[in-house]
Length: 131
Image 1 (cartoon, rainbow, N blue to C red):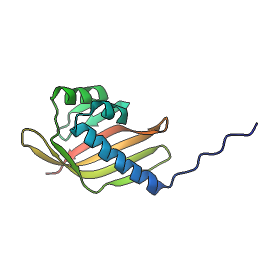
Image 2: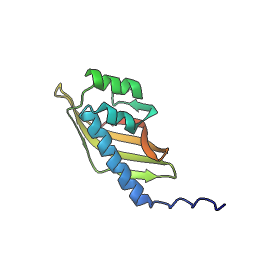
Image 3: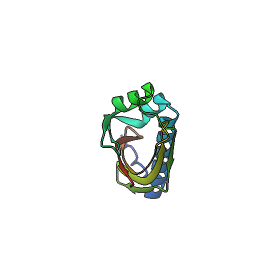
Image 4: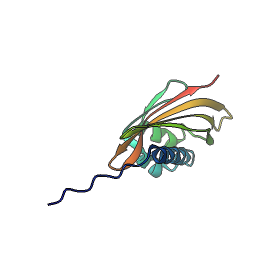
């Protein structure tokens, strides 16, 4: 029996671009309240720390969006820097978040992604307000 072929490595630059696209899709799903799509993009053990220091797990975060306790009017990401490892990637960028109250928050956003069962899933997010 012949062993299965070795996986073909994907260049880091291709993975980095995939992560950038994934992050844009993830944030667009959150703004659109597309919770089914958002759930598929967040790992079951996902955790978020907001600029205010509030923490959410995946269920709590998506529930807050579902109920309207947390609503994004827009999420505008700037240029994204990405670091890539074998099964992990980190993306960092400045973003401008707008809320229904009229509040606008500029923040650094850092997201950790892990490759799980062939899918890149967000596992941690940390947002830090820019004064």
